[in-house]
Length: 339
Ligand SMILES: Nc1nc2c(ncn2[C@@H]2O[C@H](COP(=O)(O)OP(=O)(O)OP(=O)(O)O)[C@@H](O)[C@H]2O)c(=O)[nH]1
Ligand SMILES: [Mg+2]
Image (cartoon, rainbow, N blue to C red; front, top):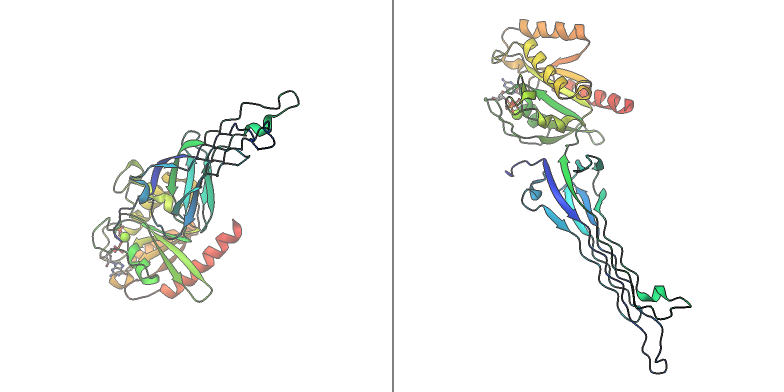
């Protein structure tokens, strides 16, 4: 699937107008002066967002931006109520946050399959003249109009939902690791910014234990000022429980590992303090291609002083991957119990 990844859009939604109440009178053979019998108008349809895991992006909304639910029908004679307008159901990916553009308020956070959010209510139907008869006016000639449906612009923002977020400089080996641990098959390349948008992958440790990983583009110094791919995509790991921070310690690495580590930490901190506070494990990657371990040892010493977890791995040889899976499971569990 090579659709562009769209993770923020604005759409206009409007509920259906309610149908008008009717003005009518009974005309029966033996009751020439029958009472008022104008039926009520039907209710307008609602616009409803429904979360589905069969969509991964908000691409559908790039071109179609206006959504209006059906009107309610007008009431009719003989006290017949107008038909209600159909609700308009719009499917969005699981992980979509719905924000009212005008107030900036979060209306809904659709985190599970099938979860719904009414974004624009349909208008009420007007009452027919049958409701308005009084002892002094037994033949009212008026009825209510149907109400307008609600309307608003809403912002849909996709925030992927994963347990573990993979971060690091470009080329650190994030996508390669994702492809080894899960069935995902992201693009891998020996050049920076191979990954241009987030991917999810699912690791099944056994029948009962699974972990969802989010692989995102590489971060570079000053990403928060727009360098490289910028840092907006970090929102996709805002909801992860644990951060796995990959640092290349092989002979291939262009950056000193401690420096590489600090650059990415600074960018995480600049994006959001709460993101930077998440439990972190540092993965010293590509150890199969490391002829001198002194740079790795220096990073490990630094991390030990900081009290940060770390582990040497190689996605290519498989070294450390079994330990990594169990460690991540444990960290995700612990983080889950705290929140
Ligand atoms: N020797 C060795 N090479 C690796 C290992 N993991 C990744 N690589 C290589 O490192 C390069 C970058 O790998 P990617 O997985 O694309 O790195 P990334 O972090 O996803 O990079 P961006 O998407 O650009 O941020 C590729 O050429 C990989 O083949 C490893 O464990 N050992
Ligand atoms: Mg990548």
